[in-house]
Amino acid sequence: MLSYRHFFQAPERGTLFQAMVDKLRMRLALTNRPNSAAVMKRASERCAECDREDSCVSWMATNAEPDEAPYFCKNHDLFERLKHDIEAERRLTPVDA
Image (cartoon, rainbow, N blue to C red; front, side):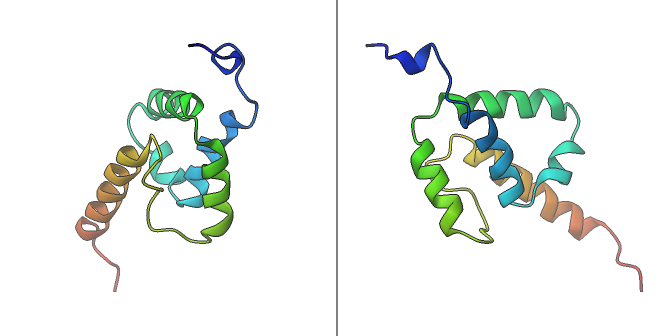
């Protein structure tokens, strides 16, 4: 059964993905990736299709500096892959003495 939400997007949903990127401190890493605009567009669309926006807003409000996205996040795997890439890059980048 379709509801009105399938036809009209809640305005806050377009900003939840951006807020999550900032909450996880991944904006720079994400925007520096190849095809970042396309990746972010798809991730934002997944976020907009989610029916857990209240849970998401509540989770962001109660987690000051989280290590990972909540389990229910439709972009959890994307954020985990990105976190893995960031950690791998740190290990490969020489530290100036």
